[in-house]
Length: 396
Image 1 (tube, one colour):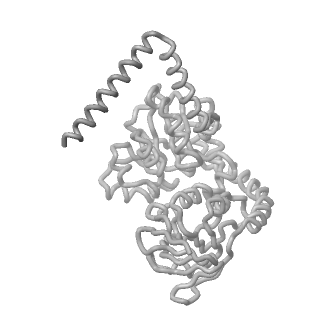
Image 2: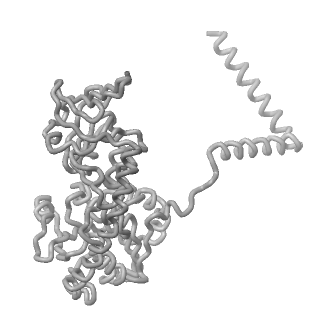
Image 3: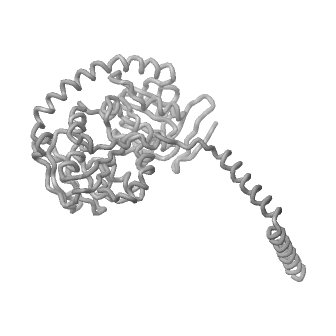
């Protein structure tokens, strides 16, 4: 039996694979990962578990993940379940809504695909493994053609609704942040955003771009030791700390003017402007920077591919497709820049290089008169120090 503590009641993993520990429950995975501790049992309700959410869960090192929904529904080949399996985290799927009735801190026992509380069966689902994952992925890949057809139809619909915004900039709000002649760095919490943002630090120091955090991207900016100049989004995943950091706030609203995030920023007493648009928050951030005269738009973590948009649960990606056509040559997509070049020098090679350098230095010292004199003086100094220490402790 293995034990590890989550800072609460220790979690037990028996030799037969049975897991006993305390649960942490939240239907919103991104909210759960903010308080999930190593050894907790995560309880989520996340259909088509996406890569970003799975990476956040894996980083918290839970003892297991219980999903009320199907982690792969067959719509598309999502990467989340594979990430959890690669991390060695058991994933039990399709447990149903009853598992969400568990209370935070409640102790449960997981036996295969069944979840018990006080010897009573709470729910039973499907324990994912490599074989089931491969079967799910094969089925999901067959569904991509349907999604692609839906996106094509969505593109024409979006163009009809947002023609004035895309072509003439109608509806883009006036902001106090000065973009004219400057670069704009737009940060979204997408794939590899942390690594890419770290790689761009020299660029930020040299060009001092306007930094725009899209919702939780604002917290990513703060975590990187930078300060956002502007925060754009519906304000559902950004922290109060970021919203009160002094950045200008642009609340993304529906086309009819309804803005769910407006009440939150008003409660914080933060000044803001409203941007009604049917696209995504990262799209309107690009349109805003372009319309207000940004010389270059650098995007980190943004979503551009079919899989990425399906991962985000978007109904379509037409807004991003057309926005990128509008921004055109100004746009530099920095997503994945951290993977463009990775050093091939291992830690062992660096150690050998350091040893070789020290040996070369020692040989150079020994082979010169000045070096020999230095070694003699150093030896005499160490002798004097050693004699002093012996005398000091001997006299005491």
